[in-house]
Length: 130
Image (cartoon, rainbow, N blue to C red; front, side):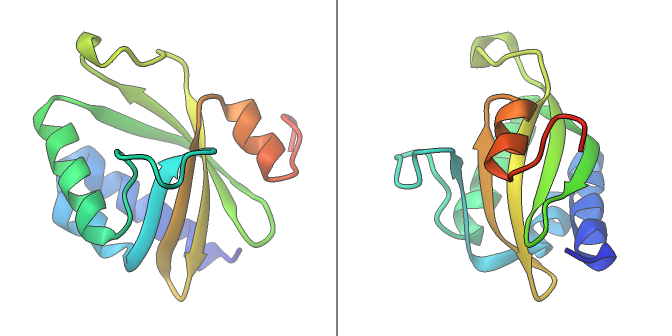
């Protein structure tokens, strides 16, 4: 991935941190997919940009915040290391997690969420020290 792809992610996460969901969604391809690893067709998976926008708006309204800690280059994909801060009733781990992200033509086409950073790095073929 090039530096432009990394910047696409940085800009999108910065926009979400500001509460600007519209700017966040601009980084997403219309046919993008966002899902938990191993569950691409789950009921709560996002199958397009509109699904993702609805999820992000609801998450923001519910008080979810997210901080992009790092981005690791995994060749044709990127691993984003993210620390979310969710309301207690969301039952989310307080530890950072990883997302394996594909960017094509300046737009995010796929985001696969892993419960841990190590799981995302392993899925990308990277070690924890990479």
